[in-house]
Amino acid sequence: MSTDLEIVKARYPDAQTFKFGDSAILSAELLALVRAGQKTATCGALRDYPEGSLDTPVVGRRDIALEWDDRPALVIETIEVSICRFCDMTEDFALAEGENETLDGWCEDHRRYFERNGGFDPEMELLCERFRLIEDLGDMG
Figure (tube, helix red, strand yellow):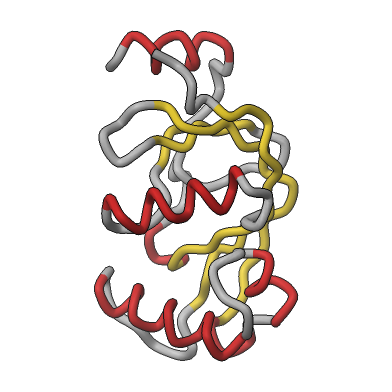
């Protein structure tokens, strides 16, 4: 664990760490969207959050988003957690993810993402999280 991450974890002792996206480029793009205030929501396949998993977002918990190289990037606070089937995704939530301008664009991008990461099914359940930015750690170190 890096010294910077140890410092941040000391300030947020209950925090879990995670990365946005599935590549360095996508991760950097998503972190930039959070910093710009455009991304206030995220989702993942419910299958990736087994019962009792510490990675499951918890309302009120503050978690540390990492850069792709494991440096601390942001601290977010979960404000809402829900489960939604992919085919039932709302435009409101999709646009809150900040990555697309339309629900159709969100569906296309997320279909490709899930195909790369364990498989896609239009009926698949998603763990949906809304969050707020607490601290930008981009200037650490």
